[in-house]
Structure formats: C-alpha cells, structure tokens
Length: 215
Image (cartoon, rainbow, N blue to C red):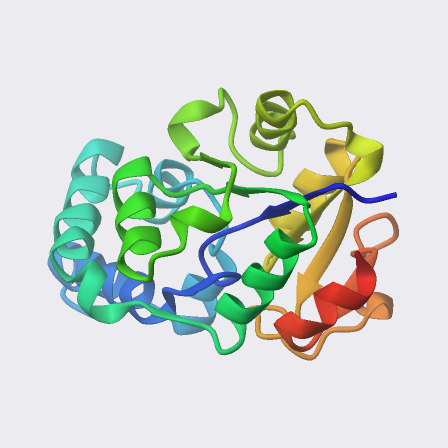
C-alpha cells in the first residue's frame, strides 16, 4: 500500500522548460556564438548541471559554463516559470488523503524553494530534498533514499513521479515505483513499449488527476 509520494520538480510540478532552454542557449551564444540544438538540450533534462555542462562544453572549465548558465537562469527564473495545469488541485487532494509527500530534485535548493514559495506549494510537502543533499545525482538512488530516510518511509510503500528517463531509473534503483508524466518535454507520447527492457515506468499518466487513481 502506497503511503509516500515523491515528486520531481522541473518538468513534473513546475514548467521550467523555457527558462532551462533559454539558459542553455545563452551559454551556447556566449561560448560559441550560436544557438545549440534543441533536441540535444532536451535530452539533458534531468541530468545534474555540472555533468551536462562538462559534456557539452569541454573547451572551458565546468565552473565557467555553469556560472554562465546560472547567472542568466537565476535572474529570470521567477518570471519564466509556471505551474502545470491541475498540479495544485492534485497536491491538495494527495495531502488531504494523508500521504507523506516530498520533492526530490536535481535543482539547487535556492531556486527550488523560490519556485515552491512563488506558488505557495511548500505547505503540500513534508520535506524538500535538493541536489546538494545527495552525494550522487540521478539516476543514482541517493536523493530518493535520502528522502525516504527523512520521511521514515519504505521503498515498497513509496512512489515517485517524474518527467525524465533519469527519474524513472532513479526510482527503480531505489526500489520505488515510478510514474512518468505525459506532459514531459522529452518523453511525451511514449508508451511502456518505447523503453528499453528494465527502463519502463510502472505507470504513465496524462493529467495530474490520474495520479489519484494510482495511489
């Protein structure tokens, strides 16, 4: 029986696609004088930023590319983000049913809290775990295991909701059931048959309300 629901933040709770893409394009323009390939940028969603920047811009230090990204991102973050439709209503119902709830995100704590506070969402979560709180990023299980420890929850009674392949693998590696959201920027329209063996989510939902039928 599920008693704990863990949510990813970017692309799951909050539509941060525009600010993330804009930040990437700013780095490309700054370092290479041209925009990057959108399909490639989308493929990095869910990865720890240092990992993505190191792979994408080997000609400069990771510290330099990350700073270019984060300076642009931080200045525009609150103005460019928005909630996906139906999220607030779903969170209200999940909490009213007595589930333990958490955010487990690859985002830095500062902007993560900014986004949640802008839309008055902190009250719906028992804990918020950011990338700084885990030794290894997704798809390693660290951030989910840390969340379970804080909540005193078991993996077999928990479920994770996310929008990326890394979220699914992170949940699986932690022994937690996984839910893929159908509004994912990278995996929209995917069915379980589209995934490699052992990488498919346990559930796929098309609207936030559908999560209530699963839990």
